[in-house]
Image 1 (cartoon, rainbow, N blue to C red):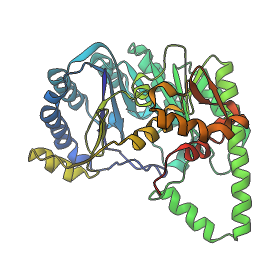
Image 2: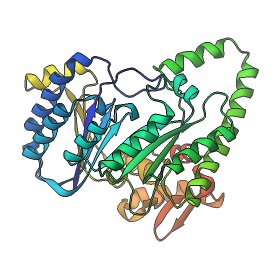
Image 3: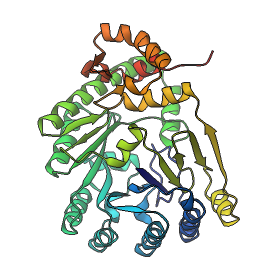
Length: 382
């Protein structure tokens, strides 16, 4: 089993928090789609496995025209052996989902749509520089349902400046009212290189170190309460909390993302896309023009690394331990198994980790300090 990830880097405008590789160079879309299809032709014959999942991410894949999407899917089906039961996902902005666009997605065989709602408060959407309104999220879901797409995921964010617990509960209630199959929720991250990072850095310079520290401590406490509220509300509504940030109706987990967490090989196509074959990682250049020129010259611009034993252990640990099943110690070498159990013992004693049926997983309490626990269990070169 294998998956394909296709990176579509185009956005109509940049959100202030986004650190993914993207561009607003709309005039290059057709050239990029041509390059994508050429990359498939260059790489496709090297992989004869049946493709079980396809994921178009970005960027904003819904910025592509129906004709450009058709071109991509024609190449996919001509070059790869795609399972008739494949999960095929596209990320969409709510305001891109017209009735005609929803019908196009369904006709192309796309059977899962992931939409970034982020919040149902229009002022916070404006703060993020999102293009859509809260009302457009609801309209987009209705249009997708009318087009017979019955697997919809909605992304939420929490931890906005000045957001209250009641504000967050309103967003949770709003997404539950949509009755979608999958919900992902992430704390707003301030990553270097983003507009939001620069805003926060300027704000920090205007405050004393004591004021900044007190504000951050208060924010961290509130974010933990928000995460607890999220888990309680969504599990009470019948969603399975199957990964730290992901919740699904029974049988509706993201098959594509789950393949990352269960060590399934995948092919990454497009600028900045990553691939993994079980032994090596490969990543395309994070530059639109260098990517297209390399493909056009049939000399793709990418880097790769062979995964050694310790790196593989770290990789498996950091993804598998995020899931509700945790990591199976059966899949580890004796050396790595012993190392993990020794390193994890104090966290088991503290109730942050649970070891049962030869699986190690985070407890409910451990979810709130998962980054710390994961960092401490990894093997770090001296």
